[in-house]
Image (cartoon, rainbow, N blue to C red; front, top):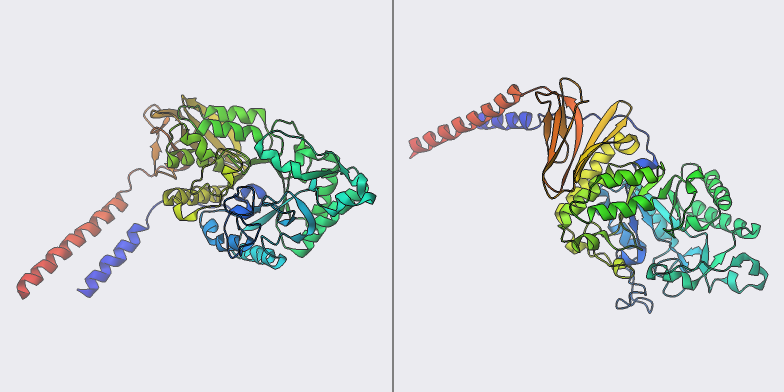
Length: 498
């Protein structure tokens, strides 16, 4: 009887694993393959920060206790969800209540509320053990009014009038003084600060805060200097004024720039059912940059979850649609902390609460993992050409192609089921869905008809159409029959003993 049971077990192992396996091409790792998780350090996780006068949980404009050790504690969770890089808000020593990191008083020290330089080094080391990268936000345009530069009469020419922007999200500007980057001494100072952090830590990238407010001449010199210090470092550009035009794409050493027009359109489309997904392609035609950093919300905008719940959308549904689009579009996605919970917030400061990991939606976290694995596995999703094949009301079908390999992305944001047909797949081929195991074969008219239920998405790859796998079906039936025979046999043996 033991031998018979062992035979059943071996057969089950053999046939459960039978199925199509997608091949993965050899690929170099570049910034377009990264999936970023954006962290506001003070509002992420408290890993051991003791109470201080600056930590006042009831005050939305004070420190709340998030620190570097708290990030280290969550690296495994972030890694499991498929994030390959974390981007930290500024960690340099700040003026009192500078929880956001933009009131820098000392460029050469870590803010004590966040930890120490050794903590930063430990974070980077632990991230690298998990094949994750660490990006630091660098602030080249502003210092706190209490910075020693501001009160030094010999450095009066180092500063200039601070830009005035309306809105709560820009209120931190009131505590700053702008640096005059046209001055050679200021330029040299900022170069030295960058060198310090590159030399003292093994960071993988720098996100230039408010790059649109710096002159292109300075940015060209600054980014070239950074690259000369560390050739393989990532350089990302943050946009402060979303209404202002910029030309950062012409600076070769900046690899990613926040795509404001796509952000606004994406948040609009996926916040409400029946909004045509085709609008997203129109947004790309407006901004054809190849340096897209994709985001649907951040620490200065209304949270995406807040937007779509105002329209009565289901959390899991809306996020699945948005993530499918972000993770399969040209550029690199950046997800703001707490999206996996998901978190709410009308705007600053409500969108900057400490992340409550205890209420995270397990189904949403699982989808983060699944969609991340697809992006990491299929090269066209990182590098491929981007083509809109067509639309049916709220549904659109996109094609990403790279080196002869194609991936099809269907997103239905409609309140009804929709279909779209294509015919360029080829004979003896079929489309296999990677999210919902959908299978599309050629119809009698020679077309492949892709149909999606309301408010759903699917990602398809092309594979050989082997028809019905009778061997596989026969094997399954055989295992089932053996199981039935074993049950009957054991029942009879039991009766004989009785």
